[in-house]
Image 1 (cartoon, each protein chain N blue to C red):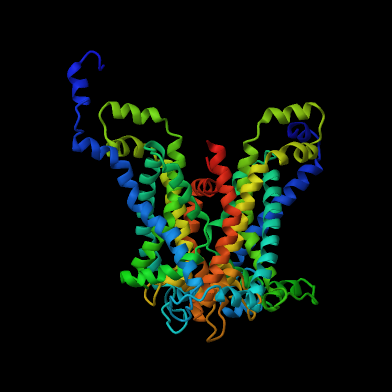
Image 2 (cartoon, chains in turn red, green; image 1 turned 135 degrees about the vertical axis):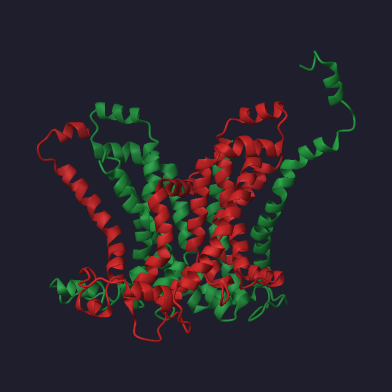
Length: 290
Length: 307
């Protein structure tokens, strides 16, 4: 169809198609453009120009203020401490939840036993359940464990809450690996762990990347656990950004807000730009199984 | 092998199974047990615990005195809860409708052998990599009455243009819809595009040879065959809508007043800043029941068809 239509000199269908596609591209890009340009302006340029005008004298003052001395409530040390908390939280939480997910997926696909499918189905509900139901009891448990309001508490919650998705990802991937691989290795006398380390894990690079990116994006972007389970010294960057943007003690500095939003967005955005393919695969894997 | 070497088969049929072998048999279960026990406690244990809190007298602190359905009665008599439900109705239906419509449209258009498809897909989907807090902060600035969109329109000559939805109690919930659709439409596009790519080309070719027009092919053949994708997208968007929390917190913080409260922000406010733990637990239970009513049949059918 398109081969036949491109032969015509001027194709209205093609023009309409491209206009709609580009219009939507604009719709998705403009907020990023506004964030970026606003963050490079000072307040005078913001008042003189409008949302879409380019900065007349671009500078990084708003960025450095957002990073190191913007006020979030009473505390004025910028987004940096929150950013560091997020890094400290996200690295162990992502690694541990991915590793456990890989082992769980291995058992649920290659070492099935009576009831294992049922257990998997019960686990799957954890992907969808509204986390509001765990907030109140969990804060009490973290208190008993002595890790309430600490980064350790946040790590624990993120690892447990991430298990259903990581297990789902690895299980569905391993189901696609031929069972003969495992059977042949068993005949050669390889045991449970040996097969996992030597045969299954070396074949898992794509799904491991998908899971790492998925967990990283989710945990970095989390706000609900961050605001409920963190204390003064353990708030993640999303909570820091929200506090910063909603502080009403003085004149609103929109350029600093936008710079802070950019800083909070950069890690996941970079991952998306570098490894978008794997990110999309995670999104669709979480949705359409099998 | 066994028939030729008798010592091996003799060793295998030895009555007491060596400890190593028995351990090896149990290994998969042993490995699965710790994380599954913890996850099940987390999911179902805490669910039950929250359920118990919702029938207790808890206020500022958990108090396990049983009070029956008192919290639920208070909940359904609360004007704020009804506002939250009404907002969820408005937000949920518009978010799902526009998310699906834009997502499907973009997927169909991108499927027309577009040269820079990869680049466009990247642009449509990048908001999904952002935190809702980032999205909310950005849109709060864009929709700022005064310095935001309104000023742009004024400078372009539309001097009577006003856009105060963000601070207008009757309109603020629609700003949440705008930002939510902006963030999620690309995701829906990715799901539909994956579905479109899975359709058998030969059916389309046959329809074309029969002289069916392109819109007709889409309407009669392609879109009906995307039904499973519609279904799972609907599930995903509706459970996202019910759980929506971050976006409202960043964009309007539930305000003005509590005009943009959703069940999730209602629950948070009651449980963690109003000292109404029992009421918060009751609202969380209602949210759980709603999500379960949508998701459990879906999971059931997904898992059953796979066998």
